[in-house]
Length: 428
Ligand SMILES: Cc1ncc(COP(=O)(O)O)c(C=O)c1O
Figure (cartoon, rainbow, N blue to C red):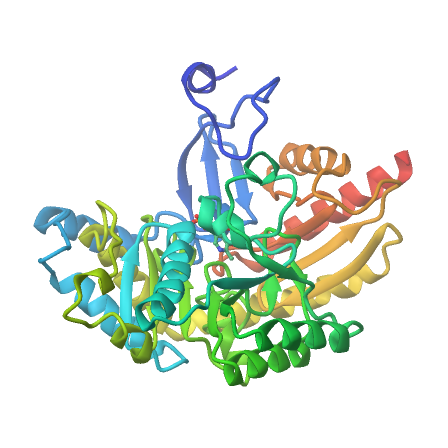
């Protein structure tokens, strides 16, 4: 047993982990590309890009260089009343690639806070205007983070049950899946016709932590058109889908209607530093400009606009401008396509979905499809035993790798999945 793991167990409370009888955490001491190494120098393939952030792989030399130069220059500065070149350049470059003609960037630290900022911007927009629009529509089963506002707009269930009494009311609707479109669209139309709906928040194309659920493009286009014509603010949560994950730079680019507010984090810094951005259209920002101090957006975090994080994001954007970035996304997608064909021939697999660099499927078990399905731990342990990091969401297995993962590494991940599926099938 590693000394580090034992020391950890005495003092650390891990995220999303039932600590009773928790397995000792694997002590990771370095990384390179798609690989992580433990104290004994065993290598693990990081097939989930360390919670979907490390798109350029671990310990990327270019990002390392830029961040270390930054640390020698300016590590941090207060951002209220002050600015610095790295935040300004980052805002300029993000707005340049923003597909929705946004004109302002608000900085925060992680996906959840970017969502909090987006919701608060939308609600205060109407408050500043003196219009009584206070309701928010969100998708059932969505996931937008773990702070209370972000939880409120997420699907209600196992993650949120203890906090039911403190979350604000949100109207949850089903995602349009092609078969239920007319029902969902009608429900949505009736809700927004009340004139009380301030905003509609969604994960474009695919719900992430809710189970990698890809949904119907046309149904979504319809919902967004109805929202737009009823003056409902559209908030696209691109925390997971942003920066190439779905094939295009932003998943919003697949739709006919663009969001008014967009949240970004995760791959923003290539997995180097915590940072997030909430961008918005000029008309939203304009409504906060006033002689009346109450109309100010009173929101900020100690590390807002942290220069070190900004320079990591700038380095990550540089790498994204290199043709290798797009080529790798296409390559990973094509490899996944071949794997999808193999998966179709496996009897305990159903619902294969492939979106850009994400491939997901459900394992057929005797239990119902759920985050609490007991097959989850069996799968996780079997993958880890083969030194492949995959974190099934219940009986949903997904691969969401760094884009730099090699074809050989992907092959290994696929083969381990096939082996594990066959072993549980034989046991069952
Ligand atoms: C779509 C989406 N929004 C928000 C979040 C929350 O991000 P963070 O974990 O950085 O707070 C996540 C995290 O998985 C996410 O997938």
